[in-house]
Length: 251
Image 1 (cartoon, one colour):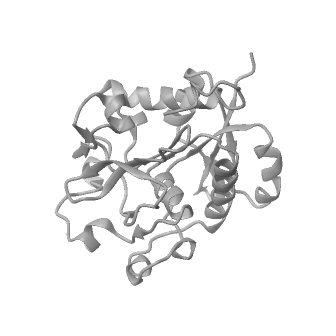
Image 2: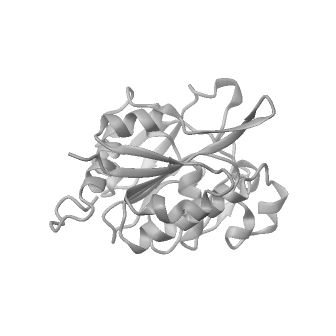
Image 3: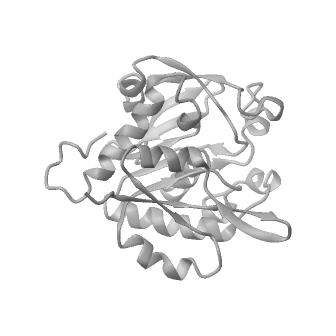
């Protein structure tokens, strides 16, 4: 049986004066483990023109980490420009095209970290240029000295898919960001909040699977069963694309 394809746009860096594109192995290995075929879309010049070919077999869209989102992509405030760090306009352009196609065609979307921010912005939401500075928050949303081991608490909204996946009201999560969701797009409902009020998770209640998470469940698989359940729910929704039955197409 052919594996359904999930598109994920790569991230670009420089190695010895040459560009390389990559996607973290946590994402790729987990998709394959769940019976999904990950298809990497490079951010090389010419990729945008190839999107119709990539889109042809797309059954899901995974949006992951990367550079800051350009403020021109949403209703920006002065702080969005003041605290702006490195951006990648082509990555924004490619992912926005894929998001709009996926939404139009009811294709499942999982946005993680930057991906959740971009998904929210495309749907009409706004962002903080820097969460801690703008909210005057004492809560760290990134800890460079303990990058992979740092955790902070979130509160899970009762009755949300996140509560269903984790079967609990609070959770310790990782955090690797300085931008974040300011105003949640009207179509979305919050699923979790950090102690400083930042939205840490949201979903679209009218879609089969459109989910944004500020944290990285794939980096915490051994810590709580809900981390894997999220990915299983995404994979189940992907496999349900194009099927007549709607039972497997809801979060």
